Image (cartoon, rainbow, N blue to C red; front, side):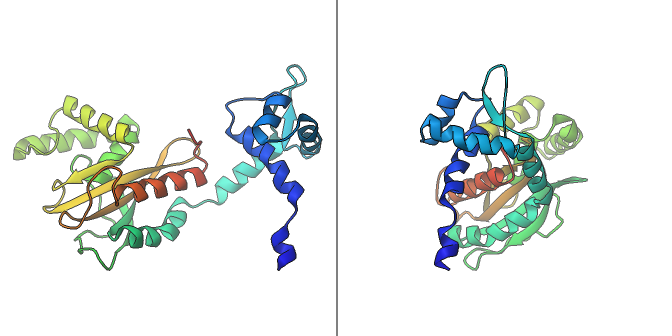
Amino acid sequence: MDKERAGIQSVEVGFALLQVMAQAHGPLMLRDLAQAAGMSAAKAHRYLVSFQRLELVAQDPNTTRYDLGPAALRLGLASLTRMDAVKMARERLATLAEQIGQTTALAVWGNHGPTIVHWQQSPKSVTVNLRLGDVMPLLSSATGRCFAAWMPRTAITEMLDEEMAQARKMGRQDVPVDPAGVEALLAEVRRQGAARVLDTLLPGVAGFCAPVFDSSNQITLGVVTLGSVATFDPEWGGQVEAPLRRMAHQLSLDLGYPSP
């Protein structure tokens, strides 16, 4: 077991070069690549020679700059095809629910809008009367607002028009009823990086929804938490929202979303 844990140090050292290239915005000169990886240029060059033979790294003959090679692309694509965002999120949801003490859920974009596909009930939380398969409204739910903020406008225009008309008919004042109000609401969601509702979808219930993005920068699911306003911390960066945001962000990174 000790030998297995020891691993091969040279592989771990060399991988630092691949990590630097993966995080860079473009090809790098040898000196910059070595400096970012924390090693001498001579040492970095030896690793790069081997990585080039394996096609993990490619060097532009004109600029002499290094970048990830075709083998790295093949590995990345193979990994992406094996990823199941919902499965990966479900495996982490129980930990999140226990940490924040509130009900958590996952939502994806379905044929009729943002749809709940998994619940994780916390023993400490108040039961919320929502079911798997429920489609969440775009304007009055944190889940809907989250998806509306990052989905292509063509996918949500009809739904938004219907909800605004219904809100006007009911005389609601807790959701926007015109395009300008909707734009302001969704801009605020994007600015905060997540959506929040208080007493909007259900009386006495507060909720957050944080987006999860994939490798193409598209929203792939929403991580939701909700609970009674009596026990739910509704503050941005608070005991509920901060862990939720961290979990969603890490899941995005694990799905290939480029770190800013």
